[in-house]
Length: 233
Image 1: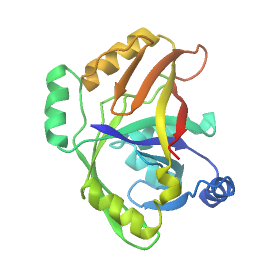
Image 2: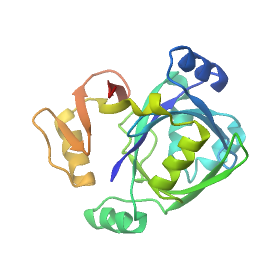
Image 3: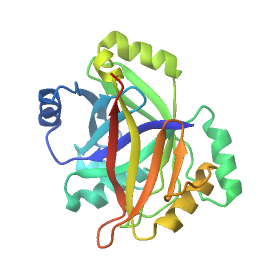
Image 4: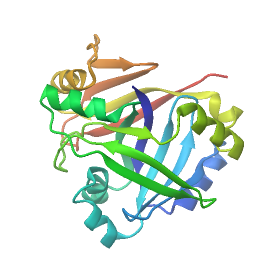
C-alpha cells in the first residue's frame, strides 16, 4: 500500500487551475472526464504521488452516481465549502484481499467499483476502487483505495512518454498530509487500525515516505487540511 493521490475539490474551471499551476512552474495537465459520474479532473504529478483537482461537470449525472459512489457524494456535499483539500487515496495490488481484510476488522466496505475515464488523447483508462461505507457529513472521510488496470511501472512509463511526468515532477514529493479534526487521538487510532499501522508520537502514522498527521481544529469540517512537499532536487 502507498499513497496514490490527494484530492482537491474545486469549483473553478480546470483550464484556469492548470494555467495557474503552470505559471508557478509545476506542470499540471488536464486529466479527463468521468462520464459515468458527471465529473472531470486536472492532475499534477510528483515523484511519489499526484494531486487531483476534481470538479463537478454534470450535476444530474453526479447526483445519480452519488448513490453508489462515495467520492462523488462527498463532492456534492462539500460544494458549499468552496475550493479545498478533500481526502486521500491509497493504491494497492490486490483490492479483493484488502476488502476481505477490512470487512474482517469490522469496517463496512462498499462493493468494488469499476471506474474509467477518457484522457485528453481519447485513451480509456480503467481502475477499481474501494470505499468504507460512510455518510457524507462534516466528519472526516476515511481514505479510499484504488487498484489500477496497469502496473505502476507501466503507468509511469506511459506518463513519462506523454510528458505528463517529467524530470521537474520527479524532483518534488509529497511528504505529509495533515488532517483537521476535533479529536486527533481518536482519528489516529481509527486510521491506524484501518491501515494496519503503528501510531507515532504526534498523532500520526507513516506509510512509505509519507506521514499522515491529525491536528485539532474546532469549528470546521473535518477534512484533509494541508499537504506538504519536499524538493528532491
